Amino acid sequence: ILILGFLFTGQSFGKTAKEIDASADAVMDRFYKQVKDAKEVVKRAKGMLILPSVKKGALIVGGEYGKGAMRIGGKTVDYYRMISASVGFQIGGQAKDVIIAFMSSDALKNFRNSKGWEAGVDGNVALITVGAGESATTTIGDKPIVGFVFDVKGLIADMSLKGAKFTKLDMSK
Image (cartoon, rainbow, N blue to C red; front, side):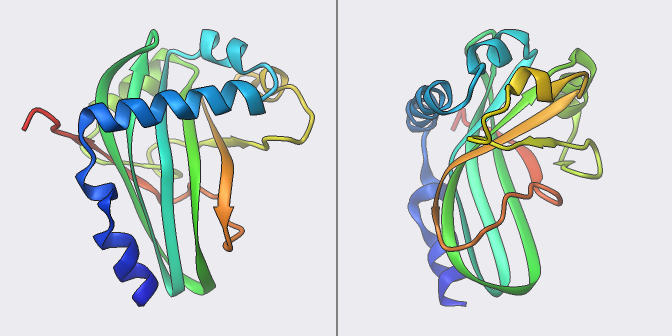
């Protein structure tokens, strides 16, 4: 419970659009360095949701939270929040970078038009293992949505996005 309290009272709730964009730029730099064929993935993607330093904490009950930027053609068009909860044998905390690449126009349109898009329900996200030595573009194939989880720091070995809910943020305030 203390871990969850720390997680959900942290400063990640208060990030401004400028801070999210700066963090997203840093994530993209790491993405290009750590993922084979990253430039080709970016070139082929219709849009990319970049979630810097997504935080997760758990003590039987777990929670995960992050804010990120949706980029189309390299420009930020919207901001999103990711949140998920889980119950089970789990303890610890972690931070990770997440990129969700929308490889088809339909998948991107469905995501952006939703009021609360849920991974595994509204669309399946095929996770690409970073550092496995395989080509990202070969692994993507014809999958409409692919996810990359990398630069993980912490003590929970969880790479799943299933059940994560994404909601568009109003950053004009």
